Length: 162
Image 1: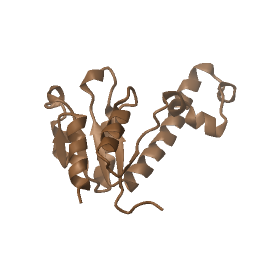
Image 2: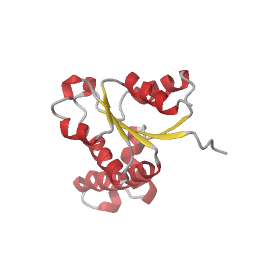
Image 3: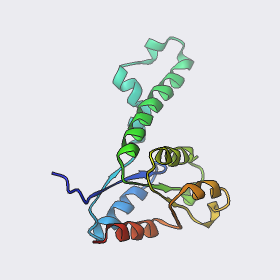
């Protein structure tokens, strides 16, 4: 039986690196009762899930140059379904914009903030000062904006305080 006081937190952000593990570790060290959800962290599975579920292969599609487009479309649809389900069920969303990985386009994170807003879910946005100007409109949609993951965890600790 799940503890009714356990928060369900959706971790929105790129799937590269160990930032989610870092958040989980910091929360565990504080003894916080939090269940974390987010996008699939296995990049290969995330890309392949649509064609894997439907059993579609390049030979099913015909023109060989068209298969990557079909694969991306199907994978994107399943990933979007996962995202919408967990954001709708979460208690809070943490949106992480990683300044150390500016080569990763983080449009999905912005989309996740919009999905959270649609469901009236609280949002903590995490980014450093280098993104302050470019994310000012997203920051305006957030309930709280912090500079780093440690501050986000401190905020969670306060929320969970008895």
